[in-house]
Amino acid sequence: MAGELVWSEIGERVRQVRLAMGMTQSDLAQAMSLDRTMIAKVEAGTRRLDAVELIRLSSALRVSMDHLIRPHPEVISRRSAQLTEDTDSAVTRQSHRLEIALVEWLREVRQLIDLGVLRQPALLRYPGEVATEADARQAAAWVRAELGLGDEPIDSIVKVCESAGQFVLATDLAGEGASVLDGDVAVAVVSRVPDPGRRRATVAHELGHMIIGDEYSSDLGLHASRSEREAVIDAFAAELLLPVATLAAGSGSSESLSRARLVEFAARYRASWSLALRQAGLAGLVSREARQAWSKANPTRSEFMEAVGWTPQPDLQDEIVPPTYAQSVMHAWWRNKITDRRAVALMHGQISAADLPTRDDSDVEP
Image (cartoon, rainbow, N blue to C red; front, side, top):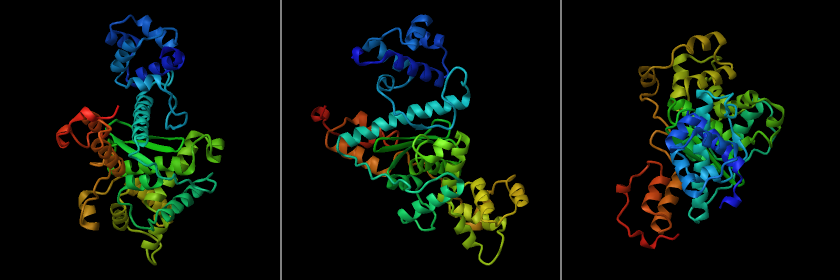
């Protein structure tokens, strides 16, 4: 195995994971009962590790050994800078922990595809050029048309992503989200920590990265800064969740929307208040002064009850893995392709071992 490994790359992964976990070289050395200089040599790529040491190292870093020794996808949508000692911060650590989860999630999806129980849907890619926020809104309208969504509220944004070819995992890690397109497989991870409206916007944002294109292959990526690119993707996400034309049509003959009416739209479309204000502003239905005033106070539970009779139900609350993926895990389990333990791990807490019927694992395929 050692002859196949590039130790400088492994050392770099060790360093980045260590930083993401908030550990110093001394912390990691203590966890492994080694001298700090040994960790420094590992990260520099000058100290090779045997299989037992790699297992101990991955355990201390709380990642799989595959994460350290297997190649990673080259293109990952990032919202912050690459994690180094110079850029080390709470935000970059959160971002990199999500990337670690993303790479693991990609391997899990690929495992089910390789087992023949999960089919990768055809990827939905926008055929036009996207260089501006207006272009991004057109791309979102195209996605709605392609998936037959019309102008109705999106019930499950995770199912929409799955229909477009992207598998989304909801995680309890802090942060926002990350996504990757690796060959013909598209996956994303999204934090469940933010409020429900923000979670939906983050999922739509990561879908936008896949639909529009990554930072290396699209015109947007080649000619825009990271912040400009993210702003364009945000425009896609907002338009996908709450189309401007829907707000305009809902205003009837009026040239403006009341706060109560906008609260109703936010509730029905389960959009964050900031996203609803943004779209209403683009529709020319709420003045800048009103948006600034309304942005200081999110709608209350009583306002939602008055507007639609119920409080918006949170998305990505109980839905951790996509439905088709979950079915594929169970198909693999029933066909003796994976063990009980692996099935539970692949479901990410959606089920426990007690939820599985009794089964003889002696016939499980290797």
